[in-house]
Image 1 (cartoon, rainbow, N blue to C red):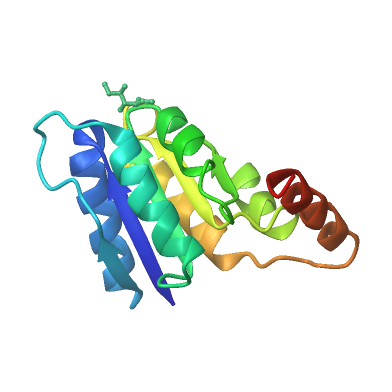
Image 2 (cartoon, rainbow, N blue to C red):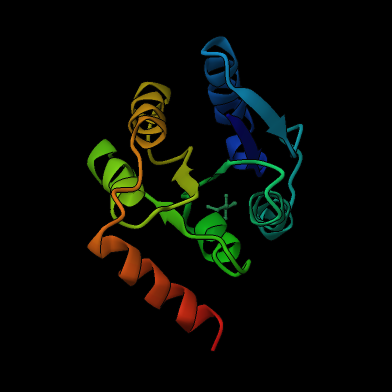
Length: 146
Ligand code: RB5
């Protein structure tokens, strides 16, 4: 599975932690930056992550900023993206199972690295359940295409 990961300056260290964690588990990780703690604007990286997922160049995306909020708002503007911002594993898991979320966002200033790893694990190990959830995801797509 190919995962695109991106961050702003507030999440540079967290991005490196999660990237190494995923690579150690055998995932192919595409890092779209940023690559230092110099101040940047998170929408730029959100757009790169969203475009990479929406085009199919990656299967899933992970977007990290200070709170996860800015990244999630911005990446959800990309057609085809269903991003979730969460700080605990239950919502992360259910976002895959019920909402077919394809981008995970969280805040490096909100949670620590071990909780972040647990959230990432639950999210990646869950699968979309389909059935009646499919119609709801189609309704979301219809709003997007209005
Ligand atoms: C950067 O200071 C901060 O605003 C950003 O990382 C993020 O939290 C935005 O939502």
